[in-house]
Image (cartoon, rainbow, N blue to C red; front, side):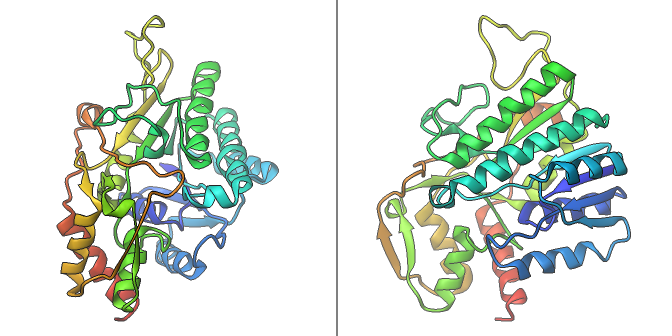
Length: 335
């Protein structure tokens, strides 16, 4: 199949593109290569993908409607996986407009491209952040998510609503994927594991928010990618038992679905740091701080639907995942 992966030079997009190429698919990787973090890391990922003749890089801004329209018309994609977004909860407080441009306007252009060019299935990255103030654990796609705690979360919730409108109006099959705290090799430099590793090796203190008491469903990137790769070929048909008197947020009578992809296992941040210290052979100097605005105290994914529909449950332990990250980090930075 010919597949569009947006954000292909990003963390998850790179790993997914590499997997799909390995399966024999043709991949067009859209990525504007913005400077939210070190572009050299994106270029290094891209260089690996470009070694495969079935990969082509399209340097296009999602918010550029004419360019997006041309791309869809010229390429004739079978499946689209939208992983491009302005990421980061904390950055959404500093620079909110970039989230509207990329995550809302850009997503609208993707929906339009899919609608007008007979795309068989649109899969897109949502986020565990949409659960916001929800506290019932594990977090379930069948519970309402109406109280986001950041503009980033709100933009991801808006994607889910926009997708449903297109599934309803145009019978476009759409699947939203709520990722839970992804980590692993080639990860983003602004994420905790990368920041902690860099600081600990440099003998610098690390900022530990909520005094290390936060709980996260840390999910290894290979598990995320395996989930995406299975779901993208599992096209939603609509839920015949959907009831408007008791509406299920995760499904619809239309071809629309929401899944969690998480490790189904919450881990305290302090334990996560302890495992990193073990792998690095060096203790961290911890600067204990209160919770930051926009953060949530805990995440934990209910993945029963993922297991039922595509027979997959993420299972990589933090011991294995952090060890693989540290191995990659030392190799990449020659440390």
